[in-house]
Length: 287
Image 1 (cartoon, helix red, strand yellow):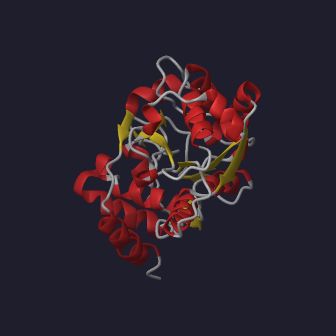
Image 2 (tube, one colour; image 1 turned 90 degrees about the horizontal axis):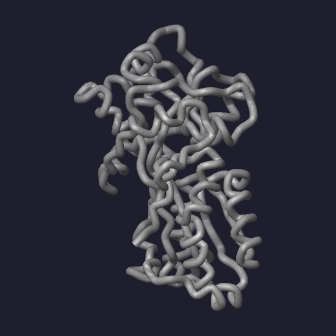
């Protein structure tokens, strides 16, 4: 069982959660005795800093946070798990996307010659979230979604490792437009904005408790805090669209984004493999 905390990302390795344990009230005294909670996540450290500072101040329990791309978080956590030595108490990772792109019109516009060599995006053969996003373009283009992917590849996009580097690439002037999260408009300082769309592809974000957590009580308390009104407001302050009623991120026109979110479908493990090592590799690297 996972705890749903926002509408931008979703946990990749949900099988690491532990039954109904997170539904139990956390033992605060036991958590304080453990003294720390280890979290692996895909959120950038500066976005998690206010939340962790508030948690540490309130309970006197330190948060040890390791950040990687969603794929990196999944790979590290799963490798440790299979080795029987999980180093995390809580794990968070993403599979969904809220993107700096417009509706059907801009998708077609991005295929025109004026955008050739001027688009940046994560490499869909290495980044699962982007592979999922491209597969879900059927929400916009129906059966012609693959034609749009091919047109995008023909624009010779600057491919980066994950979603965060897209924003820095734009700030550095290496590309004027990119595919990434709306929240980075808040999290990164620089001349960046986003285009309002009729639809936004998104997924809920979950955090789950490790079945072999070294600090289970501190982990439960951490999960309880992050899903409380106090925690959700802190999460939203960093640009996330959260599920707590009436709470929006401090991003211009956020109230216009929230009602237009569409939950993405998740490819099966076999479909992911086919997309990333087959379909998208052939499309993006055929030259």
